[in-house]
Image: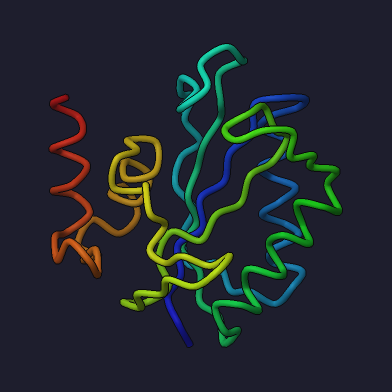
Length: 153
């Protein structure tokens, strides 16, 4: 079973309800939840002219391949009515694979670790809360150290 970290975000509709619904749908797909971070409110990233986000990260175990996991997460987003209008735009649910064990994958449509996660306090903070000693497979640095660096910026 692989250890995976999935980032969840929502900034339209019932933001907290959207995150909780997504977590339930992930469980229904047979993905074993190990821990869930606190849900935090954050400013938009990238495109700023939109409502603030609620974000969380869950740590899970799965026997799914990275592609299978991605397909399931995209299916949940679609089932929940996510519409991708433009990059970094408002969304009712966003589900991203941040880490999948210590794999480094750079393929069309699948990049693990998430290519910008190490720059996002709203991703590194929740992971540092639930798995502070997890080592970023590219940076070879514990998540808690990445979060501490981001917190000082």
